[in-house]
Length: 527
Image (tube, rainbow, N blue to C red):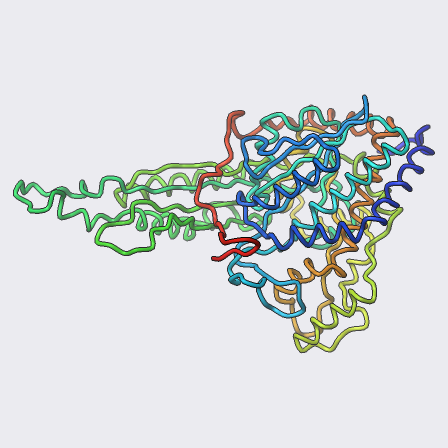
């Protein structure tokens, strides 16, 4: 659907110029902020310092901030208003991934003082948050300068890697008063680089923890001998126990993976064993063992098929191993809802700004990494797609070439929950990625992780994404016809395909499970 011209064009253009100038003037400072979050590198549900930094920063910028929003200690919700007008929202993410610690250098090494198994930013969510913060603060400055009414809302979303917070914020009503949402992510797959999603959104994501508990080992095949010298059954030490239950669950589920769903549609399942610190061997069985399964599917029906198999396997594994079973949902997200009107507004702003440009310093960093890997340094070392735009419709066509005709959604990300509360656009700006060397295959993961933390290579992402967010916000605040079109489309799509929430309204985030944690003193942690 097209976007009609309107009377707010002149004000919008002037305000965008002001917002972009603010970002230009503060880009060095924004990059320093990014380095802080990137170095914190805290894992899901344990992003204490990262969340505290955002809360303090936003309060210093004049926002009213609720820390610990939705009952989540590392979440927040911030609001700033300049009078009656639309409410627009974006958000920060800041969780890192265990096992990916990397220093901001041109060689493979963990951050100083940390194990290589400590967390590191892979996507990186650090630049996701600082880029949207740049757009938020640039918009605020423009609203004050030009007297633009409206409200800015900004949420802190922990544990994105397991779809942790957005479903909770949604159920608690944090998105109910929002008129439009801008969702940003650094690019992670082609062709979705320097573009916005069009029809194909992310699909369903389910994540569940199964806890096996052996609370009554002494009742395993109880002996009838009343004269036992031990005040418990001799059989207690031979009870299969929680570890056996976990292994039964794991092996059965992996063996049955082909029986869950057909091997088409780009669905996937992953697992993680959560540790309760039971590392000391004794002559008694393990009391507790936990395994988390997470699966991504194009639609809800497919996700439910996987769930049925996993639940059945868990029940039988518990029974075989003389254990009890507890089930804890981590996330249960719906597929995304598209909005062409929002995508057109955002991409028009991205076109005005252009793709990121990597300067001489960034190019030299990239060449130094290539030398480190024994690759002849290239004249243009960055992936060509990172420095050019692709229209949403063209990206859509390229994406569909890799998908079955029946498949509506692809991969999974928790922005999808937001799309069911307000008109939402999802866009991607390139993060630095290197051009493949002939015959060498893909670069090691540490290369992109390092490039995401080096100021010269990551600053262009902050610049372009921040200005795109600001321009989109300003258009929505100053040109009512654009927001009206987005809302009308949202209402029509919701009526045509209603998708109620998949978890109850009183669902609580599973913050107390034994998620990986890294403790230490001062600025250093030990693992």
